[in-house]
Image (cartoon, rainbow, N blue to C red; front, side, top):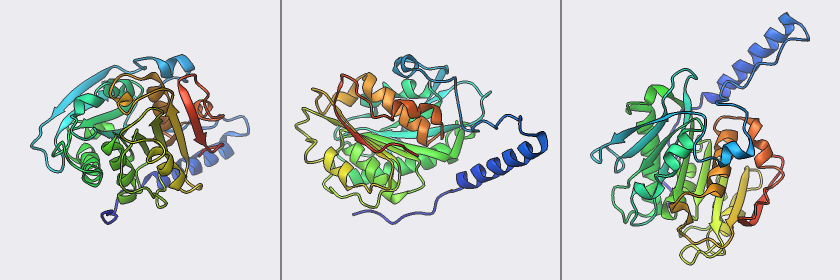
Amino acid sequence: MHSPTRPRRSLRAVGLALATAATLVFGALAGPNAAVAQNPYERGPAPTESSIEATRGHYSVSTANVSSLVFGFGGGTIYYPTTRADGTFGAVAIAPGYTASSSTMSWLGPRLASQGFVVFTIDTNSRYDQPGQRADQLNAALDYLVEDSTVSDRIDPDRLAVMGHSMGGGGSLEATTDNPDIQASIPLTPWHSDKTWNTVRTPTLIFGAENDTIASVGSHSERFYSSIPSSTDKMYIELDGASHFAPNSSNTTIAKYSISWLKRFVDNDTRYDQFLCPLPDDRSIEEVRGSCPIG
């Protein structure tokens, strides 16, 4: 079912190694009191519970529309931080569910972008595309973002993520098996006929919904989570009393932990560990699973 793995950029590890080496050299020259260099991918002020629950973050956001005539997927809308002062940002492509358009995921665009990401809510080639097709389109959208989009110079091509709802969520799972260089994946009430994901190496946060009758957690989210190897950073959050369509409207629980997951694994920002470990116990959560520590 899965398409062959394609070669991808993998410079991030080299960059981190060089940054670490530079820090060690500087420390040796400057003496024991020299400040440790900050994470080069850190964006925005130190987070608080209220800052990740807010409907808007630190950054002002602009948008760019992408035509449906683009190759590989159905176009969509790019949301991005307006400033250039902070360098490049990580990017995330988001796919909608079966029969749905990108408008059903539009609330996530400014909410995530204002926290320091370039966000691409995409339309699929057909509203009836299956998860495997949506996986291909998510990867095509990431390629477009870093190679051809009007905001490509704002994006770090080695810090990319995927999200998706329902069949788009199943597509986000599959996208990481096709492209293991993806830094983070967040399937939202995902649906997929394949229940086994033991080749996933990408840090994956799965949201299930207690009252989901379309992609029931027992047949989908929980099975997906359990099949991902324990060696992979993973978390499962089940939304209390929620339906399959909970991700289609503004949802603070989805937003706050998605922000934290993306910050932690796309930006390597350990300031967000506090919101993931110990495992969250919000009233809006019916069940949570995961391994701590992370990273």
